Image 1 (cartoon, rainbow, N blue to C red):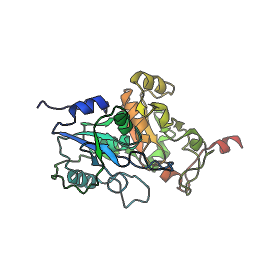
Image 2 (image 1 turned 60 degrees about the vertical axis):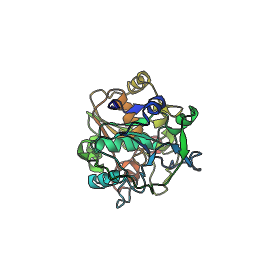
Image 3 (image 1 turned 90 degrees about the horizontal axis):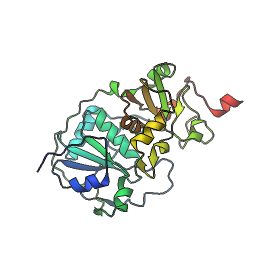
Image 4 (image 1 turned 180 degrees about the vertical axis):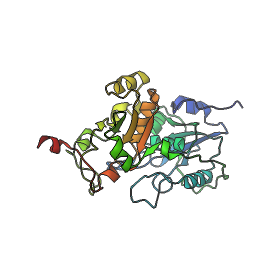
Amino acid sequence: MEALQILKPIVSADWLSKHIHHPDLVILDASIKKVTAKNESEYKNLQIKGTRFFDIKKTFSDQQNPIPNMLPSSKHFEENCRKLGINANSKIIIYDTLGIYSSARAWWMFTVMGHKEVAILDGGFPEWIRLALPTEAKTENSTNYNTGNFNSKNDRSKCTVTAKEVLIEMNGSNSLILDARSHNRFIAVDPEPRSSLKGGHIPNSINLPYTRVLDNGKMRSKEQLTQLFEEFNIKNKKLIFSCGSGITACIILLAAKLSGYTNLLVYDGSWSEWGQLDGVPIESYYKKHT
């Protein structure tokens, strides 16, 4: 069988269906419940054939940190990837049940940990279902996979920023913070889903709701994304992506990468951290208009 290569960070359902039986391919379901959702996904009992569950909430985040979804240590990530049977040469495709949502976060984590051949499924599981491609009943990760030899080569300083760094970067002429939350959350008209958080946004950040880079759960074309990013003066700037808890920030980071931007970082604490810190500046609609 010929070698399999993943050359782009996003693949189509057609591509996956053609390569689904390749021995080096690992398919991961990285679904989480949307923080603003009231109901479970309609697909909670189905999965793509051969899928393994990548548990962002309970396994692939720092369980010792009170801020949700924070990156785990390199060692922790490596150990749990090995338990899923993931190898150093695995070609990884990630999807979720909302189209493109938490899959982008999982993709980003693998890139942070140094794994290059990883991509998300464009349109996710809804697109797979729409095309009537093979599914099976969802199973828990009680499966005993052969232990993999996945290796983490983590240099998070090149991929993330801390709140202390944001305080500096938010005033820098060569950097820009993009916030993926909805416009009304950004300006504090709508309350945060986590009631303990203040409303508003980081000063000098700009709002790019993650829904703007998507079209019916799929990523917009490169041409559309390029045109969208040209609305902002971001050429040759360091781009820092933020959101509510580090999930949707990775969607707009992915969109920027597809548009050719390269200096891309995530504020991992995002608003879950900034919105509860004492002494940090916050802007909102009310502060500007009262």
